[in-house]
Length: 153
Ligand code: MC0
Image 1: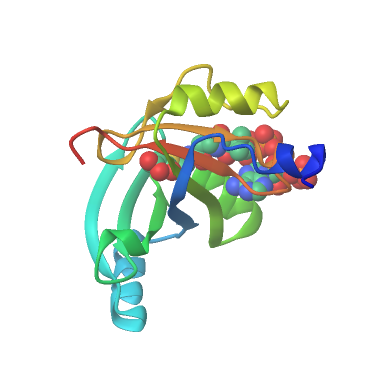
Image 2 (image 1 turned 60 degrees about the horizontal axis):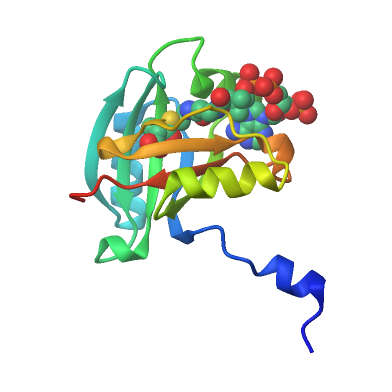
């Protein structure tokens, strides 16, 4: 028989898949080149997000988008989250992002479970997605991003 604890652990909050793993890099163009030449990944999207202070590139891991992406993240300015991360930790994994169907519902479920969302309401992420983050201190030291893709993507 399933215990209460096990039932609670498997209650869905609407996560669908790993959307991307975000990697902070000092130079975006150099990093794109490295990921293409070394791992054979394909650069499928490049965008500047002024609000987040980043220039980012989505590197598709496998032959289709279903295989997930590595998101390369370079700082646009010294006070940005990526610049701070690079100063503190150097280049490396900065975030793990999950695709969700309904970010408002997922954020509400997480808030109910007592974790801190960084934004009161979702902000705009890559390719017109809606995004929010769970503070790394409330997620075992991992900055967790939630991504609700734009309806057309
Ligand atoms: C900070 N900490 C981290 C961390 N950033 N731990 C794991 N992973 C990270 N990425 C830890 C520090 O080591 C420190 O631990 C503590 O958190 C300090 O917290 P803080 O003083 O609040 O630190 P800040 O000022 O560096 O801010 C961290 C915070 C920030 C997560 C709040 O980076 C943030 O707002 N991130 C969300 C936005 C973001 O990351 N944007 C860039 C990606 P100790 O133990 O020393 O106290 S934009 C993006 O991803 C978009 C384009 C998209 O995908 O569509």
